[in-house]
Length: 386
Image 1 (cartoon, one colour):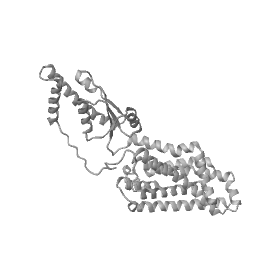
Image 2 (cartoon, helix red, strand yellow):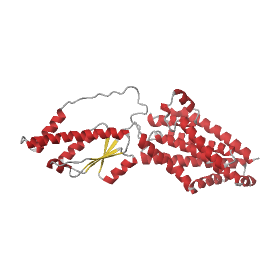
Image 3 (cartoon, helix red, strand yellow):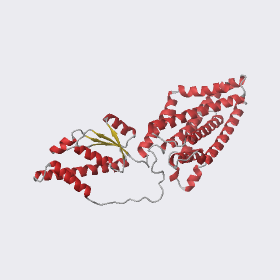
Image 4 (tube, one colour):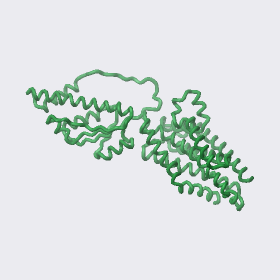
C-alpha cells in the first residue's frame, strides 16, 4: 500500500500539470498527424469525391474518377466534412462535381470541377491525373458541340459517338515495372510508419524529463521524511519505479489507442505490440530512475533528459527510418533500445508478425530494462541512505 501511495502521487503530478498534459498527450498526436500528412508513403492515396451533380455527364466524369487505379475513391455527401478530412489527412485530396455540371455542359457554358488537396509532391502528381480526366471530358464535349454546330447530330448523340471513339482509341501506353522489394511495403498506411517512432521517442523522452520530479522529491526533503517513517527503502524504490512505469504506460496506451482511432494506425499483433509497449515503458522507467539518481539539480536533469532523449531517438531511428541508414549506422543504432523496439513494431506492422517473431527484440529490450532498473534503483538507494 505504501508503494502504491508513492506511485499514485507520481501519477497525480502528471495530471495536475497543464503543460505536462500538452507535451505528454497532445504534442505526440500532433507530430504523428504532421509527419503522416507530410511524409506518409507506401499507401494508396484516398480521393474524397462529392458528386453534387447527378446527371448523365456528371456520372460519366465520376465513373472515370472511380475507375482510376492510382487512388482509392471515397464518396461524400457533405462538403464541410470532406474539407475537414482533407485538412486532417484522412483523404489526400477532394474532387467536387458541381450540381449544375450537366446544365452547363449541355448549354455550352464552362463547367468547373472543384479540387482541394494538401501542398505536397504526391498531391501534385495525382492532381495531374484528375486534370487528365477533365481534359478527356472536355475533348468529348468539344467534339459533340462541333458535330451539333455542323448539323451532323444532336449534342447528346455527338457526345455518345465521341465517348465511344475515346474508349476505343489505343493511345500511348507506358508500362511501369518495379524491381526489387518495396522498402516499406505497398499496404503501409499513411501514419503507420510515424506512429511507432513517436510512441518510442516520447515514452523514453518523457521518462527522462520526469526524472526532475524525483530530484525535487529529494531536494524538498520528501524522501528524507519517507525514510524516517516505518517505510522500508525497498517500498520507496518500488513506489518511485512504479510511478515512472505508470506514467510511461499511460502515455504509451494513449498514443497507441489514439493513433488507432484517429489515424487508423494498425499496430499488428496485439500481444506483440503490448509486450513491446510494456518493455519500452520499463526501459524508460529505469532510465528515468537512473537520471534522477545521478543528478542533484532538477533543472539540469530536465535539460539533459531532453538532450539525451532526442539524441538517442535520432540515433535509434525515431526521426529517420532505420532502413535508410548505412550499414555501419544501423549497427550503431542497435546500441539503443529504440532501434530494437522499432524493429519489433516493423515486424508486427509491416510483415504481420506475431509475438514469437519478435522474441529477439523482446529479449534485448528486457535486458535493457533489467540493466537500467538495476542501476537506477542501486544508485537511488545509495542516495537515500546517505
